[in-house]
Structure formats: structure tokens, C-alpha cells
Length: 188
Image (tube, rainbow, N blue to C red; front, side, top):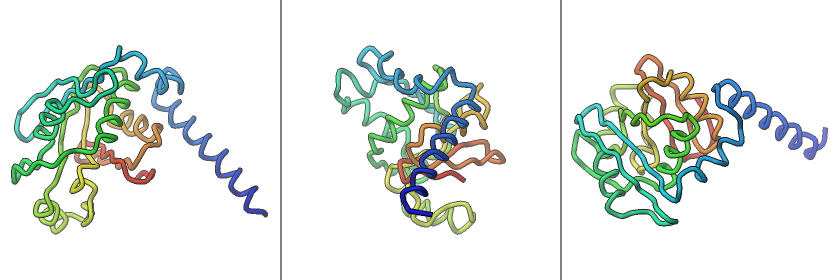
């Protein structure tokens, strides 16, 4: 079998898998992804609740084509490593991923934050106590967040994140969260 045929087959399989994932999420349709930003009226808003600190944040982080520095500072603070209080700027594509995910799920509910940024010290401590924590976690680069959304079944959140085909999606039902990141596209 030629390389061209294999590549073409993989493309069809990937398209079928994405379509199936979208259908399974209960979303209206795949074009909903393309229209999420058009419905924003030039503003992108995110809402968070940090389960460890009790802090809430609802902010417009992007308006008229520009990221808003004060809002980004607030987001970085609520997504900080609550164990050490270390703050790192979260990657902007991660925020856009969350915004798109929120739009696809059509929910105004805040993201419940389990873990945002992790300092190397915190990550090493967690990795030493759990086989599920990567020693080189994207959390340490501000490229990952562990979330759930009140009223959205965890499996639906996972399927919606996978359907976006943006980065990594980890499913942790026993701990009640979904991991999303802006690394390579993969799921576990």
C-alpha cells in the first residue's frame, strides 16, 4: 500500500472520528465551532471559580482584536499555583481554547479550576505521589488546566474538548476533572 493511500485513509479516519466525537457531545453541529467567535460581538469573556482558594473571576480578556492586559493579569492570578502562590502567564491559545469550549458547550457557567499553573516544586511533589502527573507537565509552562463545569456531565466536557482537536485531553472521572492543554493533539 502506498504512503499516499495510507495518509488519505488516516485523513478520512480522523475526519470520521472528529465527526463522531462532535455528534456524541450532543452539540448542534460542527459549524458551531466556526460561529462561536462571531457571536461574541468583538469580546471574549471567561469565568472561573478556583476550588482551592474560593476565588471567582468573570472577565473580558479580549476585545476588538486585542488581548486585555489587566484581564490577563487577573486570569493568571486565579490560575496560579495556589500551593506556592507562584504566578506564570498562561498561554493565550489556552485561554482561546477555553473560550471556544465554553461556546461549544453553550454554557455561561464558570470553569471550576482544579489546577492551572504548577510550579516545578509543586509538580515534582505531585509526581512523586501519583503516577498520573507528568514530570514535564504542560501545567509548568502555563499551557494546561484541569477543569469541570457545574451542570455539564464530565464525559460531555471530555467529548467536546476532543472534538476541538486543539491539544491534549485527559479524562479523570474518579477525580471529577478533564485536563486540557495546547500540546500536540492526543487523548487519554
